[in-house]
Length: 228
DNA sequence: TCATTAAATTGTT
DNA sequence: AACAATTTAATGA
Image (cartoon, rainbow, N blue to C red; front, top):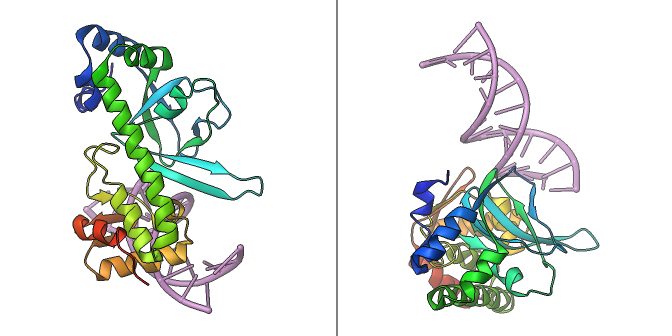
Protein backbone atom coordinates (compact mmCIF):
# COMPACT_ATOMS: atom_id res chain seq x y z
CA UNK A 1 0.00 0.00 0.00
CA UNK A 2 2.53 2.55 1.18
CA UNK A 3 5.04 3.98 -1.20
CA UNK A 4 8.14 1.89 -0.55
CA UNK A 5 10.69 4.31 -1.94
CA UNK A 6 9.35 6.92 0.43
CA UNK A 7 9.19 4.61 3.44
CA UNK A 8 12.82 3.61 2.90
CA UNK A 9 13.83 7.20 3.47
CA UNK A 10 12.07 8.01 6.72
CA UNK A 11 14.89 8.63 9.19
CA UNK A 12 12.93 8.17 12.41
CA UNK A 13 11.79 4.66 11.42
CA UNK A 14 15.31 3.53 12.31
CA UNK A 15 14.62 4.50 15.92
CA UNK A 16 11.76 2.01 16.25
CA UNK A 17 11.78 -1.54 17.56
CA UNK A 18 9.88 -4.26 15.61
CA UNK A 19 6.70 -3.85 17.69
CA UNK A 20 6.56 -0.15 17.06
CA UNK A 21 7.42 -0.55 13.42
CA UNK A 22 4.59 -3.01 12.92
CA UNK A 23 2.05 -0.72 14.57
CA UNK A 24 3.28 2.28 12.60
CA UNK A 25 2.97 0.41 9.31
CA UNK A 26 -0.51 -0.69 10.23
CA UNK A 27 -1.78 2.73 11.23
CA UNK A 28 -0.21 5.08 8.72
CA UNK A 29 -2.74 6.45 6.25
CA UNK A 30 -2.34 8.30 2.99
CA UNK A 31 -4.06 11.60 2.34
CA UNK A 32 -4.18 13.49 -0.93
CA UNK A 33 -4.55 17.25 -0.81
CA UNK A 34 -5.27 19.35 -3.89
CA UNK A 35 -3.45 22.60 -4.42
CA UNK A 36 -4.71 25.42 -2.16
CA UNK A 37 -6.67 22.99 0.04
CA UNK A 38 -6.15 22.84 3.78
CA UNK A 39 -4.31 19.93 5.38
CA UNK A 40 -5.49 21.13 8.77
CA UNK A 41 -6.61 24.41 10.20
CA UNK A 42 -5.92 26.82 12.98
CA UNK A 43 -8.16 26.18 15.97
CA UNK A 44 -8.56 22.45 15.38
CA UNK A 45 -7.46 19.79 17.81
CA UNK A 46 -4.45 18.17 16.13
CA UNK A 47 -4.90 14.48 15.28
CA UNK A 48 -1.88 13.47 13.24
CA UNK A 49 1.81 13.84 12.66
CA UNK A 50 2.26 14.44 8.95
CA UNK A 51 4.94 13.39 6.49
CA UNK A 52 5.10 14.95 3.04
CA UNK A 53 5.48 12.27 0.36
CA UNK A 54 5.18 14.66 -2.55
CA UNK A 55 4.16 18.23 -3.18
CA UNK A 56 4.71 21.22 -0.94
CA UNK A 57 2.94 22.45 2.19
CA UNK A 58 3.09 25.80 3.94
CA UNK A 59 2.44 26.75 7.53
CA UNK A 60 0.43 29.92 7.32
CA UNK A 61 -1.74 32.35 9.26
CA UNK A 62 -4.09 35.13 8.29
CA UNK A 63 -4.68 38.25 10.37
CA UNK A 64 -8.10 39.81 10.99
CA UNK A 65 -7.23 42.41 8.40
CA UNK A 66 -6.63 39.70 5.82
CA UNK A 67 -2.84 39.88 5.82
CA UNK A 68 -1.16 36.54 5.40
CA UNK A 69 2.14 35.32 6.80
CA UNK A 70 3.93 32.13 5.87
CA UNK A 71 6.00 30.70 8.72
CA UNK A 72 7.70 27.99 6.76
CA UNK A 73 7.60 25.84 3.68
CA UNK A 74 7.44 22.09 4.20
CA UNK A 75 8.82 20.19 1.20
CA UNK A 76 8.61 16.48 0.44
CA UNK A 77 10.58 14.26 2.77
CA UNK A 78 9.83 16.31 5.87
CA UNK A 79 7.58 15.64 8.85
CA UNK A 80 5.60 18.33 10.64
CA UNK A 81 2.98 18.94 13.30
CA UNK A 82 4.86 17.43 16.25
CA UNK A 83 4.63 20.64 18.26
CA UNK A 84 0.83 20.94 18.10
CA UNK A 85 0.58 17.25 19.05
CA UNK A 86 2.75 17.72 22.09
CA UNK A 87 0.96 20.81 23.37
CA UNK A 88 -1.87 18.51 24.30
CA UNK A 89 -4.42 20.84 25.80
CA UNK A 90 -4.03 23.50 23.12
CA UNK A 91 -5.52 23.83 19.66
CA UNK A 92 -3.47 24.18 16.49
CA UNK A 93 -2.08 27.69 16.04
CA UNK A 94 -1.54 27.76 12.29
CA UNK A 95 -3.11 26.60 9.02
CA UNK A 96 -1.32 24.03 6.90
CA UNK A 97 -2.08 24.59 3.21
CA UNK A 98 -0.97 22.69 0.11
CA UNK A 99 1.01 24.88 -2.29
CA UNK A 100 0.91 22.08 -4.87
CA UNK A 101 -1.13 18.94 -5.30
CA UNK A 102 0.36 16.95 -2.46
CA UNK A 103 0.36 13.49 -0.93
CA UNK A 104 0.74 13.15 2.83
CA UNK A 105 1.25 10.24 5.14
CA UNK A 106 -0.44 10.54 8.53
CA UNK A 107 0.49 8.99 11.85
CA UNK A 108 -2.33 9.05 14.44
CA UNK A 109 -1.59 11.05 17.56
CA UNK A 110 -2.19 8.05 19.84
CA UNK A 111 0.55 6.14 18.06
CA UNK A 112 2.85 9.14 18.13
CA UNK A 113 2.41 9.52 21.89
CA UNK A 114 2.69 5.77 22.44
CA UNK A 115 6.14 5.69 20.83
CA UNK A 116 7.13 8.90 22.53
CA UNK A 117 6.27 7.44 25.94
CA UNK A 118 8.63 4.49 25.62
CA UNK A 119 11.35 5.05 23.01
CA UNK A 120 14.30 7.23 23.97
CA UNK A 121 15.82 7.34 20.48
CA UNK A 122 12.56 8.57 19.06
CA UNK A 123 12.40 11.20 21.78
CA UNK A 124 15.86 12.38 20.84
CA UNK A 125 14.83 12.60 17.21
CA UNK A 126 11.77 14.67 18.08
CA UNK A 127 13.69 16.91 20.48
CA UNK A 128 16.22 17.61 17.78
CA UNK A 129 13.46 18.43 15.33
CA UNK A 130 11.79 20.85 17.72
CA UNK A 131 15.17 22.38 18.45
CA UNK A 132 15.82 22.88 14.74
CA UNK A 133 12.49 24.65 14.46
CA UNK A 134 13.34 26.83 17.43
CA UNK A 135 16.61 27.76 15.77
CA UNK A 136 14.80 28.48 12.52
CA UNK A 137 12.34 30.88 14.09
CA UNK A 138 14.97 32.64 16.18
CA UNK A 139 16.97 33.07 12.98
CA UNK A 140 13.97 34.63 11.30
CA UNK A 141 13.58 37.26 14.03
CA UNK A 142 17.30 37.90 14.02
CA UNK A 143 17.46 38.36 10.27
CA UNK A 144 14.57 40.83 10.30
CA UNK A 145 16.44 43.02 12.75
CA UNK A 146 20.03 42.56 11.59
CA UNK A 147 20.13 41.73 7.93
CA UNK A 148 19.61 43.67 4.74
CA UNK A 149 16.95 42.42 2.38
CA UNK A 150 19.19 40.49 0.02
CA UNK A 151 20.77 38.59 2.89
CA UNK A 152 17.37 37.74 4.31
CA UNK A 153 16.41 36.08 1.05
CA UNK A 154 19.75 34.24 1.10
CA UNK A 155 19.04 33.04 4.62
CA UNK A 156 15.54 31.80 3.80
CA UNK A 157 16.77 29.82 0.80
CA UNK A 158 19.75 28.41 2.68
CA UNK A 159 17.41 27.46 5.53
CA UNK A 160 15.55 25.09 3.21
CA UNK A 161 18.65 22.92 3.24
CA UNK A 162 18.40 22.06 6.92
CA UNK A 163 19.37 18.39 6.92
CA UNK A 164 17.18 17.39 9.82
CA UNK A 165 13.99 19.21 8.88
CA UNK A 166 14.26 18.67 5.13
CA UNK A 167 16.30 15.53 4.50
CA UNK A 168 17.41 14.88 0.95
CA UNK A 169 16.40 18.26 -0.42
CA UNK A 170 17.47 18.63 -4.05
CA UNK A 171 19.46 21.75 -4.98
CA UNK A 172 16.75 22.80 -7.44
CA UNK A 173 13.90 24.31 -5.44
CA UNK A 174 10.60 24.39 -7.24
CA UNK A 175 9.55 27.75 -5.85
CA UNK A 176 8.25 30.76 -7.71
CA UNK A 177 9.66 34.16 -6.85
CA UNK A 178 6.34 35.11 -5.34
CA UNK A 179 6.54 32.11 -3.01
CA UNK A 180 10.06 33.02 -1.95
CA UNK A 181 8.59 36.44 -1.20
CA UNK A 182 5.91 34.94 1.06
CA UNK A 183 8.55 33.01 2.96
CA UNK A 184 10.71 36.08 3.43
CA UNK A 185 7.89 38.55 4.01
CA UNK A 186 8.81 40.62 0.97
CA UNK A 187 6.99 41.86 -2.10
CA UNK A 188 7.42 39.96 -5.33
CA UNK A 189 9.28 42.92 -6.84
CA UNK A 190 11.80 43.15 -4.03
CA UNK A 191 12.23 39.40 -4.00
CA UNK A 192 12.98 39.48 -7.70
CA UNK A 193 15.70 42.09 -7.18
CA UNK A 194 17.23 40.10 -4.34
CA UNK A 195 17.25 36.88 -6.35
CA UNK A 196 18.96 38.64 -9.24
CA UNK A 197 21.58 39.95 -6.85
CA UNK A 198 22.20 36.45 -5.49
CA UNK A 199 22.44 35.14 -9.03
CA UNK A 200 24.99 37.80 -9.96
CA UNK A 201 27.06 36.69 -6.96
CA UNK A 202 26.97 33.17 -8.37
CA UNK A 203 25.13 31.65 -5.42
CA UNK A 204 21.95 30.63 -7.24
CA UNK A 205 20.54 30.22 -10.73
CA UNK A 206 17.01 31.39 -11.35
CA UNK A 207 14.71 29.99 -13.98
CA UNK A 208 10.97 29.78 -14.53
CA UNK A 209 9.34 28.72 -11.26
CA UNK A 210 12.62 27.47 -9.88
CA UNK A 211 15.62 28.52 -7.83
CA UNK A 212 18.69 26.36 -8.13
CA UNK A 213 21.32 26.69 -5.44
CA UNK A 214 24.85 26.54 -6.83
CA UNK A 215 26.85 27.74 -3.85
CA UNK A 216 25.12 26.80 -0.61
CA UNK A 217 28.13 27.58 1.54
CA UNK A 218 28.33 31.22 0.50
CA UNK A 219 24.56 31.54 0.60
CA UNK A 220 24.63 30.45 4.24
CA UNK A 221 27.51 32.77 4.95
CA UNK A 222 25.60 35.70 3.52
CA UNK A 223 22.62 34.88 5.73
CA UNK A 224 24.82 35.02 8.79
CA UNK A 225 26.50 38.34 8.16
CA UNK A 226 25.36 41.92 8.34
CA UNK A 227 25.64 44.23 5.36
CA UNK A 228 24.41 47.80 5.29
C1' DT B 1 5.31 15.67 -33.42
C1' DC B 2 3.56 20.11 -33.91
C1' DA B 3 0.33 23.93 -33.28
C1' DT B 4 -3.03 26.05 -30.32
C1' DT B 5 -4.69 27.53 -25.99
C1' DA B 6 -4.89 28.14 -21.10
C1' DA B 7 -2.56 28.83 -16.84
C1' DA B 8 1.26 30.22 -14.19
C1' DT B 9 5.15 33.09 -13.60
C1' DT B 10 7.87 37.02 -14.38
C1' DG B 11 8.68 41.89 -16.01
C1' DT B 12 7.27 46.69 -16.07
C1' DT B 13 5.03 50.79 -14.76
C1' DA C 1 -1.80 46.89 -7.78
C1' DA C 2 -2.59 46.44 -12.62
C1' DC C 3 -1.26 45.15 -17.05
C1' DA C 4 2.01 43.08 -20.47
C1' DA C 5 5.21 39.65 -21.81
C1' DT C 6 7.10 35.18 -21.36
C1' DT C 7 7.33 30.26 -20.18
C1' DT C 8 5.31 25.92 -19.34
C1' DA C 9 1.69 22.41 -19.49
C1' DA C 10 -2.30 20.45 -21.68
C1' DT C 11 -4.93 19.37 -25.54
C1' DG C 12 -5.96 17.58 -29.88
C1' DA C 13 -5.07 16.96 -34.80
